[in-house]
Image 1 (cartoon, rainbow, N blue to C red):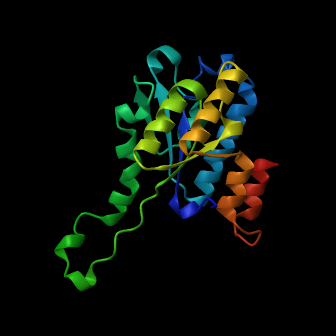
Image 2 (cartoon, one colour):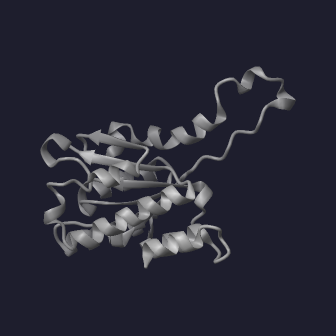
Length: 199
């Protein structure tokens, strides 16, 4: 099973200014998150962010926030407890429009498919990220974890989260895997643009 760009949404979890310096390999983790956000923008993939208790941990970097359609502020470790699942279902509902039912049946358009595939990355992998991903799986989303854009203070905690997520049914991928699966072909009109982001 490959990622489908038309079924995907991107979720970037808690890359906050007071948290990131303590994350193992934080510069590479944040760089890959930025790459994902830029690829999503180029390819028309809706992107969302979260911030855990931003009054204490600060915001996500301004450039990352700018790549997200909305950044959800939260107090629960799982963003689903603060309305994330509803936010992720909104693009399909909005695309349907509000007046379609008033049209005669033969003129109504079929509702667009939901973007049920959540490509996600974030920090801390074993806390907020893990709990959010597990709740999204419970909400029947497909969860794809971008491992090289995830981080915890220790590798041990990060890797334990990856093991648990894989066991729960999440797919583990890398930033480059996401890029080439979203593109599918070197003939894609944005191939060179996306390639420039990952080189």
